[in-house]
Image (cartoon, rainbow, N blue to C red; front, side):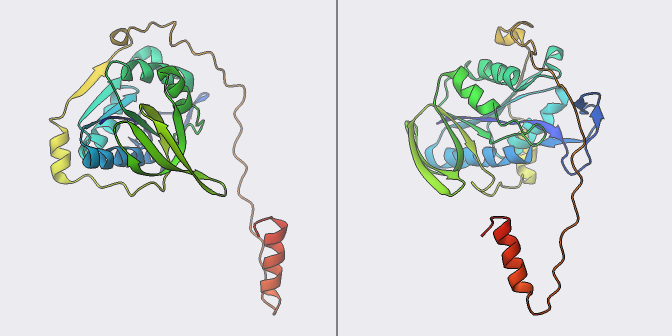
Length: 255
């Protein structure tokens, strides 16, 4: 199988975010491979181990985004592609999908795997747009990838009330949830091997794209601080604590 995994280099989510005008500050900030994408890399590696083939990582970002691709290579992916161009600064989800689609189309693929949404953007729209641009079906919120081969995928798709069993022909785009697997750690051997694996850096010109193709048409209308977390409600157990908690949960429609 030829498996492509979309990965993203983001500011470390364990560090308080900083803003640079109306954008999230990235330059001079410690970056990491998006934790959600680690599940996608692991899913791709498990399918490769089961069905054979290779795993290619594709990313878009500045030169520092090599760190994210290299991280995935150290986990076991075979090769990486980084699209880096100054004109892509501040790109929205639509532009990102256009660029990734152009890079992916350069070679045959059986499956494209992505996280449900990026940890820094949370739009959740890029994978669906990517599937449309590639002209293939999309399956979202995949929680198991056990029955996937080079022609067909039969997966469990997570829902609010359980899961659906969905079957589709390949090639396709899939988004995987955080519960799909347990990402492996990069071993010392893997880290050293990653240095010798191919990592191709491309510009827009290499993809046959122009600045008009990646024109950003979205504008940020407003930025407001997130609402501070409110203090919780304390129930003193005077013998009726359990009943009070049950009433609270019913009011919140949890039970």
